[in-house]
Length: 264
Ligand SMILES: Nc1ncnc2c1ncn2[C@@H]1O[C@H](COP(=O)(O)OP(=O)(O)OP(=O)(O)O)[C@@H](O)[C@H]1O
Image (cartoon, rainbow, N blue to C red; front, side, top):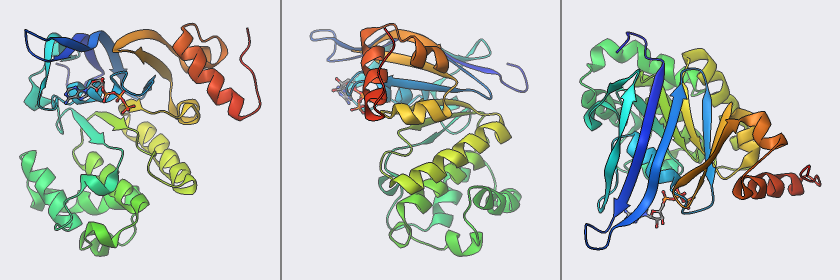
């Protein structure tokens, strides 16, 4: 693998549940590539397999679900699951409140993450303050002493992003990162993510239901339907010439909100 990884690739990934007797394919033959500095939005109806694809990219599928084929590689080198989460791919999730342990301070969460990555807090002390400032959490020392219940949803999402930055992973999986936030905070978090992608040259897999978020952040779009990839295209093309019925439905519903129609 090159010193500065460029591409993170899922190839022919099939995820199933139910064991040999009652096998049910949940994601079928999915291939996606993340590129540093670009945002790939993964969209599709509820239950189409977006979150499972993210979990697979993080090497952490839920119990009862297994990857039955496919490979995950960085610049062509296949990586074991334990090399993915945190080291190669950081994550921010939908509900920031449920992502934090209610009886631990922010500092304890940071230390836990750094320890899991085999890093020493002493070496990283300066980086911790810098990461918090970078995500707009001023007075890092005070914030690090807070418990989750003392923070707003927006602050917790910023904290989750700061922890993702601290991991120094080149790729980021963001599963509905703004869904649980109010509209003003959503806009601020989107602006923050946009800046961080540029600043840190992150390759991002962004799961969202919101085509407004796609229009704002994504460079490319992948559309899932019942676990299958049905369309991949640059974002402009998806909005101007959506091909698959699911893509047309998603774009059409978005345009209808703004009183516009899909071109035939
Ligand atoms: N742990 C699990 N065991 C069995 N089936 C599961 C499990 N997790 C998810 N599934 C099934 O896999 C399919 C894809 O689920 P997934 O959560 O990836 O969809 P999604 O596109 O992220 O949906 P949403 O937009 O609602 O979050 C669904 O049919 C779901 O019921």
